[in-house]
Length: 114
Length: 112
Image (tube, rainbow over all chains, first blue to last red; front, side):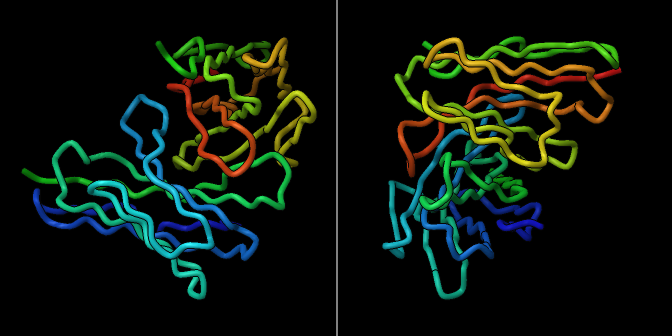
């Protein structure tokens, strides 16, 4: 049973345009959400996070939006660059759960075309 | 200087063997993890460990066991390897709870 879902396995955008990656979750206990970026043959790299007490967090070209009522979050990248081409994983954790373990979505492969 | 490093990067072994994957972090974090990325590319938690407690994902077979000689190391031992154990295994660490985890580069295990 997937508690974190990324329904789009891939996304292709033109350089300079906006990339929007989506993520849905089912566990209402999740209170901290993260996005990771992964290149082939490397480990996931932390990108940006958001606490459930916020609805938006911005860091440079990256913005994460959280809609708790819809149990939905999204990552906006603007402007998109070819170097952003990678697999993006959404992850969630719950402070109530022991161990601070992350539950990951299945990933979305982003391709930014020059 | 690599923050979370794991060795080896590639491991090919026969069914039935016992193997270990080593992980070290130099971030001073107090919690370490092992994650498994299966053939469908899903990343799933296997263990969470700090100096106080080990949290085990109930779906992990008891052939898998984490060993922590000290706070900076969390090694993964796998006994009686099976074909289905083939995957990429990632070590990670974090400081406390609620913070982001930093991942190693992964170990691709192939059981033949």
